[in-house]
Length: 169
Image (tube, rainbow, N blue to C red; front, side, top):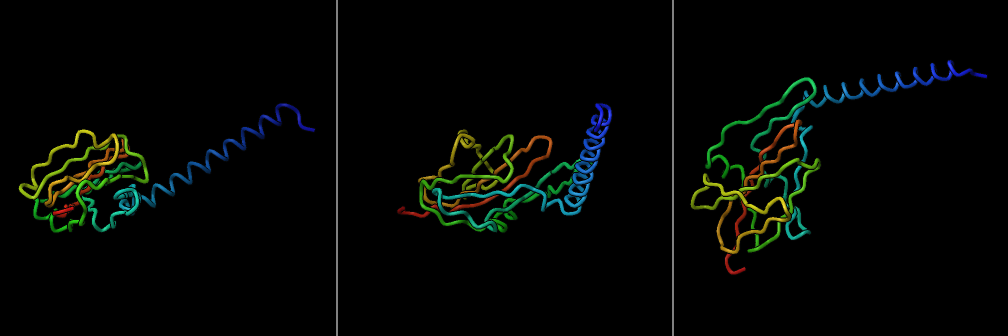
């Protein structure tokens, strides 16, 4: 039969061992993520009209800053408008298509901007983008979207994609 002190001692030793195991697990995971930071970033999915997901290669991750417990990984190269066009083939789309943007980790804030083929350098922020799906324009043409996702202390990621709204749709 155990007395109170022995029970408390065993509980404290068990709690300490569990805490050490958790710390070691976090340390190992963190070291693996630091060696391959791009694999640790949240993934993005863009769904059109609630059914069809945009192919991952159509969404270009242009840069990120991601914080780990021991270090910060940054990849924020400058891209010209021509560079972005080369990395983002346009996705054919009907006018007024609904696009939902989802992440594997919920961002703290999301800023979505759009430019048109007249000037891919001039982005205008979509005011209601965080409230629900974004809607493709009704006017035919090519449009580029910039998605800036902020994940609080973890960091931020910038994505680009282009759409081509078809005439007569």
